[in-house]
Image (cartoon, rainbow, N blue to C red; front, side, top):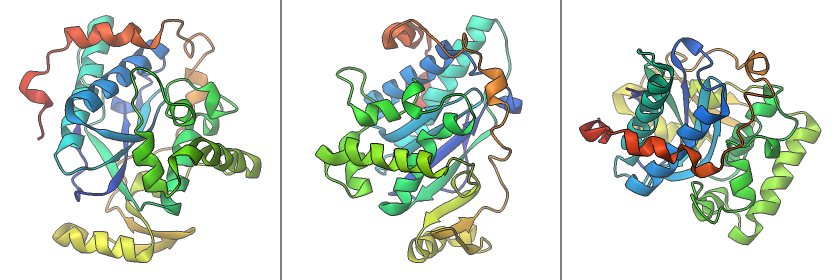
Length: 279
């Protein structure tokens, strides 16, 4: 079962990253990525998880959430990761870990810093060389930010607009402009501040986070990084580049002709019981 990276302060926006066990490409097929997304929807429904963006790749996931202080993040991660792994193991008739032991959490300041984080998440598969534009990658938040789903909504567009500091009616337009600008300017490379640090934002935000962490923040460094500051992690929990995604995602494995609801049959077969609660 996934365990949280042991740095957490309630009330922030958090960028969560989690790799498959041993960096294996256990999510290389679209059907398995769809199962993960179906369980993310279920976490939103059960626990009120506030999802701002997400992306599922062949061997790791990105999830941007807003903490509402009800332990909903821990409960949701246990549900989503646990049931995704169970569904995969059942289908493949395998046993053993599906996910790396811990997921990594980075607090992100709302506003301009969050804009950069959202674009970074949306461009994940462009960065991997799998698609030319995030609109071409189905299992991610880009399409839903652009146009809300009528059913099975996952991204809270109103909460995202508020956190970004834009009006909800303008969200799709400004979001598209940010992504197009990043593509045009070639800003698609991997940036470790989003996956290896504890916090990203202004100096005041990062220092306040360090203070809130108390003993856990005492020996973490506050350093300038790009347009802001980061609170460095004591050790990189995420690590490694996301290279070799292209080799693991053939045209066949990237496609899934079934509708979004096709994976909800797995929801009926997973009974996590008391394991879905906060740890």
